[in-house]
Length: 310
Ligand SMILES: [Zn+2]
Image (cartoon, rainbow, N blue to C red; front, top):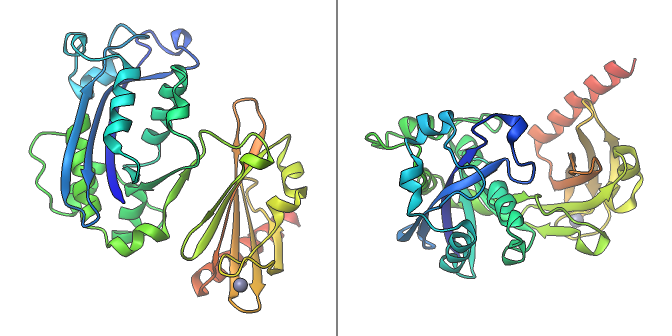
């Protein structure tokens, strides 16, 4: 499997939000990507400038960061062509790698605008290099800028930040320094193309966990009443594990539970809710083996929940 490390630059409405196109608030103007082989060696690179079709002036904040002008983009290709060429270049056996989770989402939003989403069927899995960097070098919950990571790792960066190919190269430089054994343990699942019905729901089996993305429901309460959403199946044997702490939420956005599989021990369940564009909700559930740290986290959150309830 190849690693496609990519970065996008995008433009937005130069006249503020009121004049923004709701279906395309961020118009992609540059794609840069690096393809790494399984040993993380650079195999090839991809770069396209994209001629804007929606916003015909570069927003000041974008110009300040990328130093790109409309003249630079005049020779670019239309987005649909760039997206087709990019995906053809990616091949068939690859995983996307990006700094943070926004680029994978914006790529799809731009593709949807041009009715191209069939080229990238869900579920779209990717490695969030920002998250992997945090796990490998700092702590799970920190989120650093790419520049911070490059400095921290002592990678020489000269002047070049905030152009797509340079940033893709820097992201690849960071990825190469992260222990590769972490990659299969922490893939992210993008939910821009969330399931529309039961048959489209995703179940993704990972070495030590399982992820599930549900169809949408009218409310969180309705979602939690659904048996598939609230089930706690062991990711190792797929049998139903007995819940010892029932689903609870200390902040309304994330629910936790603790279950026990008689063959594989304790399991932590986490459900995060996302809103759809039509104000419905869908659940992203992860069930994973619970070590001492996870158990402690659940107990602490449950204490908080019980205190709040009082
Ligand atoms: Zn089991």
